[in-house]
Length: 125
Image (cartoon, rainbow, N blue to C red; front, side, top):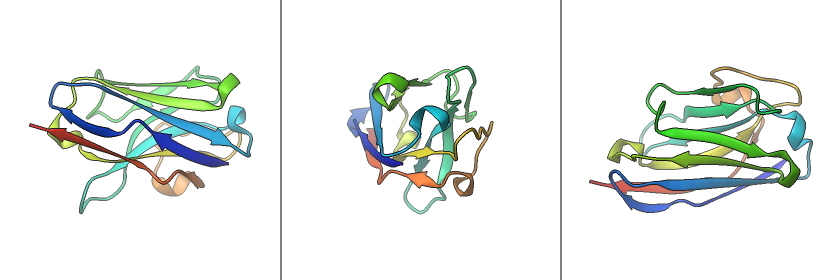
């Protein structure tokens, strides 16, 4: 699976962004899709995950109530709507795909074999 993220940028605190991830070349509809992020000098961390059919979602505590993950299997895309952004949300955001039929409620980077190159989100105070 090849993944390409888009939608990052510079936004003021309290603002919103919508990230998109376009998938190709694999069984997108059978994979769980997740967003991770990595701030400078920090480890890559889990943000959100959605099961292959969209029936199960989970979020990191730090983004619950502010971020929403969704997917469009007809168009091989997954999205992350980010509201009420905070400076601590500044990071490179990565889209990741699981192995087919796998789902993790709180995956680690090692659980996800397929990654995009990331898109930078910068939140100014």
